[in-house]
Amino acid sequence: MLKQKYLIQYLLPLAMTLLFLCLALSRVTYMPVDFFVYYDAARQAFTTENIYAHNIFSGQLPDEGLPFVYTPFTLLLIQPFAWLPPMLAWVAWTFVMLCGLAWALRFLARSISQDPSSKFVIALFLLLSGTTVIAQHLAFGQINILLAVACLYDLAANKTQRISWLPRGLLTGIAAGIKLTPAFFLFYLLITRQFRAAMWMCAGGLGTLAIGAVLFPVNTWHYLSVEILSLSDKVDLGSNFATSGNNSISGALAYFWPDAPLAVKAFFILGVATTALALAYRLHKAQRTLDAVLIAGASIQLLSPVSWIHHWVFLVFIVLRLSLNARTRRWGLTGLLFLLMQPTDLGDWMLTSLPENIILTAIGTALREGLLLLTLALGVVLALRTSSFEISETGTSNPARLPEGQSSKR
Image 1 (cartoon, rainbow, N blue to C red):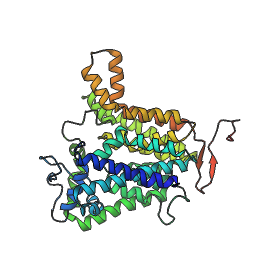
Image 2: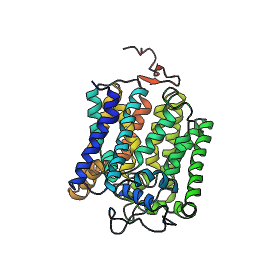
Image 3: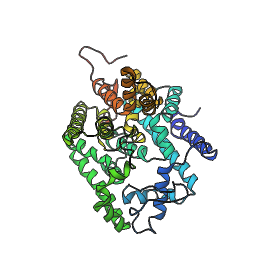
Image 4: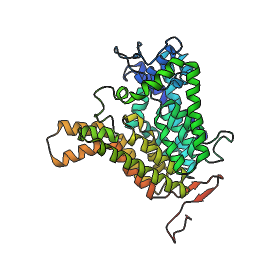
């Protein structure tokens, strides 16, 4: 019988990749436009002086093209896929993303010393792949799973789980050098006094910048001097900023309070950022490093100006972490069921198609902003309810702090 780790890490991602290939060949699914922006930008990188001066055009993209909004270093990262034919490249990319999701499942289970049955793991993995976050991630061919996995491994893995020569913070810096949002982890490292990791994170980010400057000097200069100042305008794709697809605090305010003063926006954003960092600090001090990283990671989507549905990978990790622990499983599975409902679309439909009713409006609003509200709710659950065990820095399983007088023995 195959070991569970091989089943999770290889067979299931391969099966899911073949499924998406069949869907693509039968034209049931739409073109993964985000991946083909990466792909075609990488193919044009060495022949186009300024990749940011215009939209990316190809046979796989809409007639009007789409902008490339990532750093010049990303153009180098995508090169191995750019050597493949378009659809084969997307299948390979999808396989990598699904392997990353499978790895996260296994990593989270090991980190809280849980060993769920193979049937439960398979069901959990397949259900996760059907959630609104992961399904859209795979359908669009996004990169966020790869970045989230890099940060999770880099900041939450203990000494027995990580590569000995790889300094903590470096991968997170590289992730921030691909997409700017992981840079928020620098505040987490500083507030928890992980100064060495913070320095390595800065080194990783600056290293990607240096590599980009050497290989793509014009692109790098344009990105730093022009592009970085207008990212929100490009990423929101015009009029979509206030849609349910953008579930960030800024997106919610733009829909419900379009004329909100800047002070109000700053109050909400700074309040959530301060609360998230305070919770992460508290969890880190309680030696719950994994939970601290999950809280910090999930807060990034709340704080970012634009957080499309496929960006909320750390929310999926929190759902996974709660589902794998028997003591918090009901919370995790409730979150999983909620994500399977495609809540943002359902909420939009209720608000626009059903008769006006205070109860229906309240439910529709909650569903429309479902990812935002679910992150807040499960973040509180994660912060307040300890795990049964958490792997220590030495690799041994230590009982989590339990209420006084309660035994950790089962």
